[in-house]
Image 1 (tube, protein in one colour):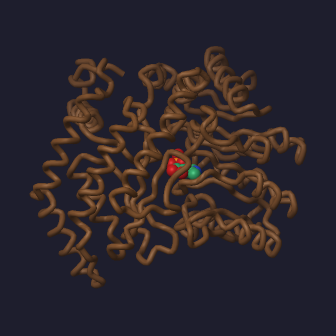
Image 2: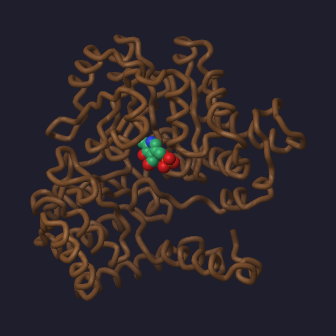
Length: 448
Ligand SMILES: Cc1ncc(COP(=O)(O)O)c(C=O)c1O
């Protein structure tokens, strides 16, 4: 999407917000592990006339006329997904990861059925049965946890599965820095006859790039978002594996029916086009190099943080993510570190850590990721530089303590936010970040 005078003349408010956002992305270090910079080709595809079309149904079976071009786009995305992941069936219509997960529930479970997923504060996703998600209200959710060392407690998973006989088990996380033990999950799910669903939203790009084991031989269903490590537009894909079709030959049809007409209306055809383009790019050898570099960068970041005396959940990483444990300095420190880093133009997110002594809104951890920085071309030396900056900022704010009293807390945080803006170390870090960003230009083709 190249900037034109048209948008500026039509809507200066939205135009200037988009420009400001481009500047923010260019002049900052994007380290939220679920974010990435999609390619210009994907941006081209999603900003097209495909957004004008209604195409309820599936290729060759639409409810409206005029879908011959949309069929080409959707069939292309489907075929590329099947080939890239090595599955017999793919549905590329889910609007995003959360509705995709809901569709999976409604394809294989009934309300009230027992389901199991990784507990949210242990790294799982809301839609895997957390109490404030509808998934935790419609289904009987039995969460599993990580051990004190931060690794998944597979003995507990088996024990809970044998006791509760779930209909569906989720494997996959939003805040877990270690390789997922797909094989162990499969043994347990098979033992109790549960559907095993791999939610690889975070690691899909690593899986297709060969930097993480594939869940396809082990799971019945694989679901992913397309906008994280896969570097596509915002969307999702649900896939059924050979193992899934063996368990239930109607599984693919059930999922398609749940997506449409069960849950959604017209698919977002412009997004489908972007997904097709991103799958083509992800099938090329350069993407394998990208995925390997994401993990190398994450390991370099983890090692340098550790050298700086920063504690990490599980002590390191196998994937694109590093989870910092801030409890050595007190509880609920994530909000201070995130705010200070924001001021230094390093974008991260405060996150709960296993057995967090604080609350999800004021958690005691920080989640960092390398997919976006790697898309910019940064490598290990830059990761070490960034780790030193993050360690410096943590050192600056570690002596803060969150008051228990709500009013006191609000006042304390407001004062902190004012003061951190003036902090010399934060200002110096911001200058270093700006210099680093200018060495790795983002979307240089976009003229504003
Ligand atoms: C593991 C996992 N599943 C599902 C989702 C939901 O995706 P979306 O935000 O597109 O609804 C996320 C998002 O962060 C995720 O991390």
